[in-house]
Amino acid sequence: MMFFSFAVRNLRRHWIRSALSIIGIVIGVIAIASLGIMGNSINLLVANIITDVGDTIVITPHTAIGETFAGDPRTAVDAAIPAREVEEIRRAANPHRTIPVLQGADEVEFGRGESGYTQIIGLASDDIPILLDLEEGQYPRQNQAGALVGAYLATEYGISPGSRLTIGNESIRVAGVLAERGFAADINPDYAIVVPDGWYESHFGTNDAYPLVIVRVGDVEQIDAVKEAIENRINRREDIVDVFDSRDMLRQYEEIYQQITAFLVGIGGISLIVAAVNILNVMYISVTERIREIGVMRSLGALRREVLRMFLYEAMILGFIGSVIGGIASAASGYLISLAAVEVFTAGTTFGENFTVFDQSAVGFIVFGMAFGIGTSIAAGFYPAWIASQLAPVDAMRKK
Amino acid sequence: MNGEPILRFKDVSKVYPLPAGDVVALDHVSLTVEPGEFIAVMGPSGSGKSTLLNMMGCLDVPTTGKIYLSGQEISRMSDDDLTRLRRDRIGFVFQQFNLIPLLSAAENVEFPIVLTTGREESRRRAIEVLRMMHLDDALFSHRPGELSGGEQQRVAIARALVNDPDLLLCDEPTGNLDSKTGTAIMDLLAEENREGKTIVMVTHDPNVAAYARRTIRIVDGRLI
Image (cartoon, rainbow over all chains, first blue to last red; front, side, top):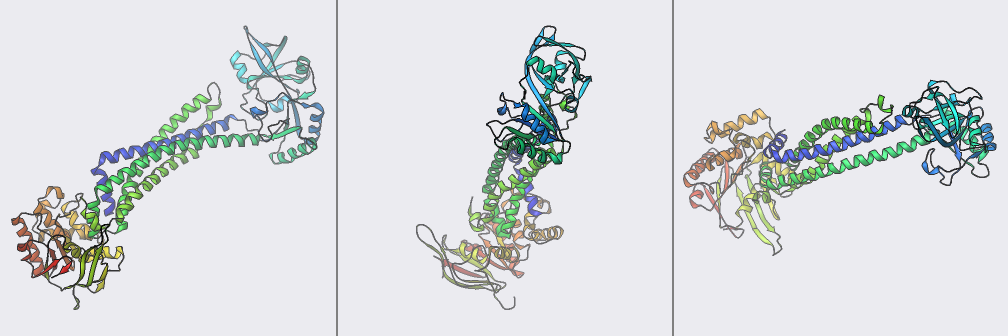
């Protein structure tokens, strides 16, 4: 206790120096914790945006890129799976539902003179309700023309059920508006128009091939078995299709965002190391200034480890105060940064609505930042403290 | 002390290896210090008297030879054991006073015993010893920087005596004081010796040495 109060007094004696060291630690801890929280928020947000359709298998034409994930932009090639193979897939996936997807683009007039190329997705009428939810209106009936408009497209152009669109030169009635779906492994209709396959084929012409086939597997447990069955049946002689499930995509994104978070925390770590160097410097000065005092204490009967402890206390106190202030400040700043980040990333969507910044891992980052702050302070203080403790009392007392 | 001398040097040498060649600070020194003695160690500067005092105080160990403190051989002891001996058995008074600037007078005196004893008991004992040194109560809470040289040396002597050491070692205790203050300090030390404290004191002032009852002279590391 004696040596603890010594440490406190010495820090107070040089309070400006101590305050500067503390500020260094505070900044470091804030940097680590708030960058961690921010990375974590982005991560949570992405997980929120990505529609977690864990029971979906996506089959695309085999691309040269090989091992990748559904939705990888590098696999966006103009290729399709022939209808013959789709039937094979249907048999392999039985009894699970196989949904072939037609995808194309055409110029669409939205009325009031506004137009632009838009993605058109063609689906069998009875597949649509299985894959997509409606915000308003109705699903188009069997063999009847009627378009479903993606949520953002509808908001942007003020489209509601009953409106008319012109796709290419053909006019079509809007039957309904789709619910917001988010980024998914299979199809992304938020900015697209969904039409029945009959209308699609009569509009674009038929080539009996599908760029994408979706298999809905009711039970997540069976995904791997179904994937294997499809692989065995279609890719027996050569790779014709690539088979993914949506979990692959989530895994990939999680990996990417973990790396982003690690990178951000790493930047924070650098600032904390700078702070630690500052503590090292301050402690070293303190030891050098007090060499004589240390010699006196040693000659009066202070053990080496007691001298060591005294200096470690100093480093620990600096680290502790800095980390506590930093922890509190980073809780605040992390919250604000995350709110801002969520704001930016979800502008114009509703994904951020139920989003909370402080989950368990955000608190974890704060605790980690604080622990790292105290840890680096003690580590930085150790060398000067050790030097102080190893001084021979006679030599130390001889110093000016 | 069960017939043992307080201190016994047996053929002690100390050699400092330096790049320019070894320096022999002590050359085969043998001596004994009996309980209750008051010894002055005199000699020109560089003669080895500080080295002698450091070894008596377990601050340094001999290169060859043996030192017995109350019968215990110290030359092979670990740093921790030597430190404990200093803490419990030895009192130091330095020329520069060497008070710890962060601590008040009373806290300085407490230092050696608070390492092993409770705070309250340490404080009680510190105040008792400070009063014995005729230091004004009002000064107990002052930092060393606020005290005169004589007052600082009184605090330093109180600190040296607070653990009731077997041996009080003084290195030029009056070297930084004017003669009047120096005389007062020497009177305090003589008083301690009269009450039974064993004192070894390094000085080159014959007037100071006159307080001692035995004088050891040292030249070039040898006793003469």
